Length: 406
Image (tube, rainbow, N blue to C red; front, top):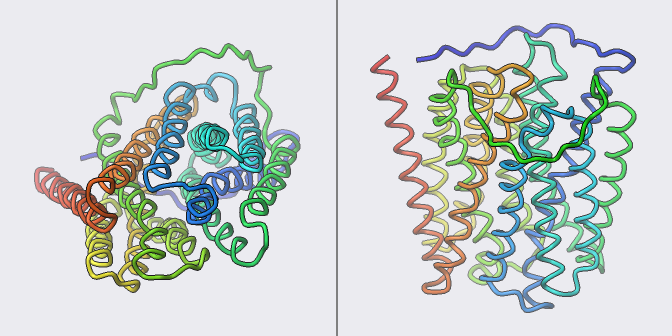
């Protein structure tokens, strides 16, 4: 079994003409702002359902087109930043996030809303792969684990802050379908300025030959890559079920009409994933994967209990456990894959990793929406929670067997 270690902290490596600390801050802020924009609609779907007659199937379709946009960007252009440099691709990702916010502000019809979700998915796909590689690049070789931890923290932190801020703004403002997107638009414009001023420019002038290139994973990490995708993907699968059922479950079955609460339920999972990064930094990636998968099994079981018993407490507990366990798995996934390859391969490997993760996020979320058309929301959620729990158990068994064989 491969051995993965974490080095002791050393001073940051500078870049000519730029403060490394400011470059890290600008990249992290751009990552955070972009990912916030992708989850803004989550706690607002109940408002869209009331004002624009969005059904559960409509919400599922909107999630599906978003996921397709993410995976398309990751698979078609995941290696682009390895060719033209990180900063140009980061700027495009943030610009797409700003365009998505504008489209949401104009989304008086369903086709415009669908387009906004596709653009949001493209921005997330470009930012997820490139942003992760960029954060690791900004740290010296002996501290790249810190870069990976920070990348996951701002990624999942942005996803969590997006749902929470949209829910709060929906409750405290008179324009719940406008103010959240205006705020995100301002943040995206500030992020563009920060990247332009502080992010390291490419060593040579980029040659924008936009041609999709097949993502490749070096043979030396392929075994670790499969494990990483399945473990981190299991975490996002539980997140997909949680995202698909929480808002409608709280409103329809628990009678809780607050928009902050569904935003809080989803944000707890993503925010605690950020917390999980600091926990993962104190253990080996192999241990983090095993403990994380055990936690994911518990999180899926708690979610099923919440749906079956129509209870709030296990739903909140599921979000917290999911976050901590998912943070362990995602941190270990990056440590055993993206951090182990040369800088010129990081963009492609990072994009391949997150493409697999987002596919596993989308399948249960879409499945819940489709199954709801034939049963009901709680039954569909319990079914897919059980399936994800089985996947997590299988990952635990596989790792225990692998340890014994080693």
